[in-house]
Image (cartoon, rainbow over the protein chains, first blue to last red):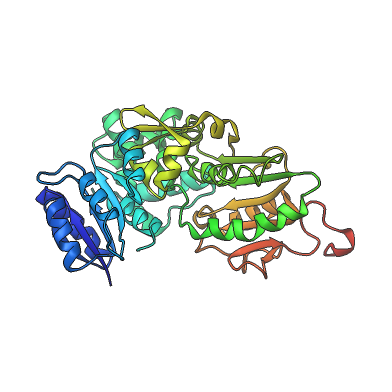
Length: 121
Length: 286
């Protein structure tokens, strides 16, 4: 079973994502912001991270830069999942090391196809 | 909403008579949702009322709209992904060698719906610019639905459509934002492909001879007789050394002897000996 860490300050989004991911046979962990996500990664690195952009304490972009710039030998796939849906944000995310990008709102098929593209589903 | 058996039969007959497609039992539950926007626009309280108007036969525009709505236009970019890997790993590589002199490949997407398959192919060739330098890659998509062909030609897709199946790197390379959460295919790719409203049972599009034909998830809606006719049409439009790709759940077995399984590429089909344009007369089946 593959593992996914859902990082989003919205409880509703985390719940929806968890539901979809569990039907896709993922084990799911949650974090409310980038700081908590880094702690989760320190204790157990997931196969893939579903990452919001705007969050309190530490944003998705700050988290991604910290993760990719770290000495951690394991690097998970990172799929941004955000309402920042313009091309400038998408380019910035790819440049910072994101593997894929999901524009909210999303549905099960979209998420599944993106997870297939990064090779975890 | 409950739809009477007689309305279901009338709608199924209408669709089959006009398009050759059948409404299979497992698609009947979708009739109501497929027709919901027409019922709203035309103020019908239920499907039976709409069918009564159709039967009266004085509203050709309504008939046209109902047929368009009943067609299954499900598609997305790089649908199922594996077929594209198979296509580029097998037939495209083989035909690249076979067509070295003329440097021309013709591809027909029969039943292309709103164009995602056509543009997926065009992106795949465009992403290997150096390899295909000097080649003429002609990709044409056909569909019997005028509405879907118009959308394909426009090349504008919603946020949902553009990110389903399409890697984000290819999305930002080949699409432009047009606002309102819509994305438009780049002019270069738009100009590299063609679309025509045409049924598969009609004559093939220009140039009439294709190296590769994709006809995925189209024939499953046809009756066995229509499938046989479609295979005959496809066999008259394919190069003798060409390749045919069907949907994952589709096969030629038991329906035609004009195509056989490609021994080198599981899931693909090639014209039978003596079949296809340019087939050697010696190999032609008596």
